[in-house]
Image (cartoon, rainbow, N blue to C red; front, side, top):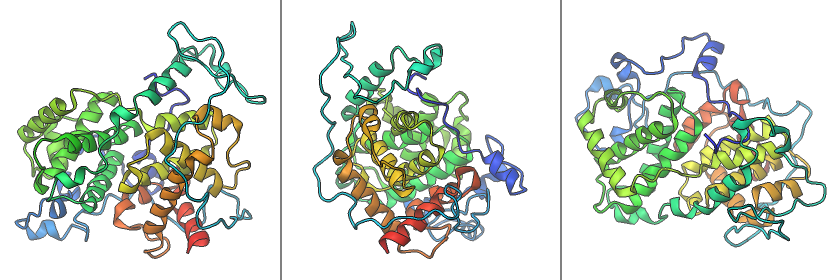
Length: 410
């Protein structure tokens, strides 16, 4: 798709992780017999007490069965940095108090395109990062700026109501965090592209924002599951059957329930799924810094942590992507932390990201300092992302972030 401009982002490969651990990777669509090994969040979200004892024994304290082991998290030695690298202490707040992020000033404009899009001139010393793609039609170098301007322009349209939980008395933010954590686990297991995960959560939040009737707790997981189904139809090449999605939820919902919820969501959202994913903006930033795999991997982990926290919902996808990249560069001691090129291509200067970075640091502190070091169940709110990014394939990014937060914010 055109919004994947910078590079083909590697997907979490369960096959590679399983092979490294000496285990057989799961099939793209698990058979019904494996459903018992993928227990859903029903004990929390639905309050169902009539679950067989054999089923309960497989559940974790959060209501989810432990996911298939993909790779030992290993020690807390981060693969992202050399052994002699050090982390500089930072102030409690990275920037200080600030206003809600807004795009930085553009400066003098060059002649517009025929469609009225005005490209601001590049600051002195900032190179054209798209020049090398002149003969690559998949990178759409002739339309990159127009595409990014469009994606920035529609962010507000796809922003959910941050106070929607007040409309649903049986559900709270803790339930949402548990459900999103489960969606991350299912997304990883089925080896879906990253845009699918972010779109699924956005669909879920927007539907909950506009639902005419309160969603009961026992149907909240159905909303999340159906949102993931719709996201796969929009982003993926191959989509599991509806019956297979029902198996993911241990057949607590029938195929007809999923189809009816699909209709409800489509009507409520008017078939609008062109969500500007934060991954698109992060890839653009990664291209600006010459595809630094370390900063991008840490940035991806930070985005998935932000996905589960209600504190991050007020910030747009582009702001979250830029803030994740900035915090990643700070953690990895990249200098300068934010330069003219990153400001130009992200459309945000360092000062305009202060509120989002501070909020993200707060989320990391709350989910890190309350648990034992190296604990894969690092605060139920983000344990699926923590385990995924503790693998060698993801450079043990979650262990690195955990270690950095403990050393600098304990």
